[in-house]
Length: 566
Image 1 (cartoon, one colour):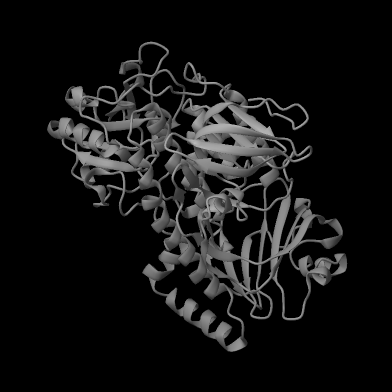
Image 2: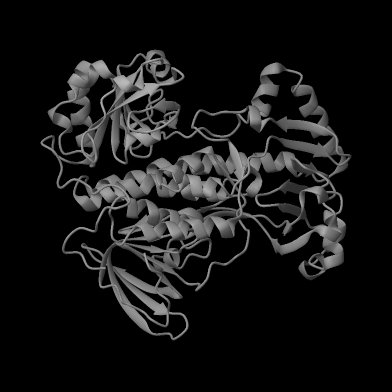
C-alpha cells in the first residue's frame, strides 16, 4: 500500500470496495478487507493524520479484532491497562469501584486499555502496507455517488486542486464519521438526541512523578462532573462539564485549564496537547445500508462517552461486515448475507448506547440532594455481595451477542449467537503458549475433540473452513501432527492448556462448535450431525449444498484476484 498524495494522483478505474474515511474504523476495515484479498481503495480527505487524541479507550473485544487484523502486538505495545476505575463524590470519597485487574471476560485480553489515537492511526495505516491490492488516496473527498445493479460510481475530488475523477466500486463503505458525506450522499437521516451540556476535554503529556491522581476516576461532583485518567505514553486525559454561563473561549484559557487540572496533575509540568469543548450525542442512522452503500462507526451511530464504547462499536461493525463482504465478493455467499450486518449490530449498539446513558445518569446528578441520594444508595447496595460483584466486575456491560442473524436457526439460542471465548493453547510448529484465534484461521472453524475429525465431510468442501482438533491439557505437543505445506491447512491440532475448551463443550453438551470468522458461535452440534450443520451453513450463506464458488484468498500476502484493476 502506497499512499497517493493529491499532487501525484493515480486514478483507480475499478475496485471491489471503496472505503470512505481513514480514521481508526476506516483503516481497520481496510486492513480486514486487505487480509482477505479484497481490492480496496481508501479515501481520506486529510493529507496527514489529524494528530488529535480524540478516542482514548478500547476493550477486550476491540483488542481481539485488532488481533484478527494481524496488528495486535504493534498496537498493544503502545497501550496501558488501568487496574481499576473509581467513582468518587465531590469530597473524593469512593462510592463504587470496578476492579479491572481482577476482571476477565474470557476473550484473551484485558477488559480495558487506553491508547494514544495518533499512534493508533499510524499503526493501522502502516498495516495497509502489507497489501498490494489496497490503496490509500489522501487529500481526496467524496463529492457524489450513484448506484446501479452492478456497483457504485463514486465521484471523487482532489481537495487541493479540485480536480475530479470517477471510481467504480462493487460496494462503498462509509467510515467517514459523524458528519458523514457518504450518509448524506445516500440521504439517510439520523434519529436520537443531542445533549445540551458542553464538556471541556483536555489531553496532555505529564511525567509520572507529576501525576497526583494515578487511577482512572469519575468525579461525580454535582457542581462540575469530571473524568480523569492516566493514559498511554505518559499522557493524561481530563474532561470537565461546563457550568451554565461558561463559554468555550473562557474555558480554553491556560489559567482556567491549570486550575481545573491542578487536583490531578501538576499544572506546571502538564503539557497540554488538546483542549476542546464538545457536546455528546445519542444518535443512530435510520438505516445502515442503502443498496451497495453501507455505514460503519460514527457514520451509523453515535453514543455518550461514559462507557468508552464509541470507537469500540465502530470496530465491531468492521469485524462483523468485512468477512461477510469478502464472502459475497468471492461468490461464497449470496448478497442477502449483507442484510445480517445491521440485523446483528443495531440491537447491540442500541443496548450499549442505552447503558452509556444510564451510566451517565449516575455520573451526572446535578444537585446536592440527588448526589447525596445516589452516593447513599450505591454504598448501601454494595453491601450486598452479588450487587458489589456486579459493579466491581463490570458485569453491567452488554455481552457480545446477537439476537438474530447469520447463525443456526437464525436466532440466538443459548450460546449460539454469542462470542466464543479465547483461551490459551499450544500448537505444533509454534513456540510457547498462544491464544486460540491464532489457530482458527480467517474463515469458519469447526472446533472439537480430535476424535470428531472423521465427521468432517463433504458438506464442508469449498467453504473457507478449518477443523481445529482439541487435545486435553497435558498432551505432549511433540505428539501432535504438524500441518503439511505452507498454505492454509484444513486441520490444525491444539492442546487445551487450561481445559477451557473441553469444559466449555461439556458444559454446553456439544461434541463440536462451529465458529464464524468473527469468532461468534454459528452452531453447536454432535459429531454425527456435522453433515447437516454444513448444509445449514451453506443455506445461511445462500449457496447450494454442493459448495460455493471460488475459495477466498487468505492471509496478508493474498494477491488481488486476476483481471481486477487497481
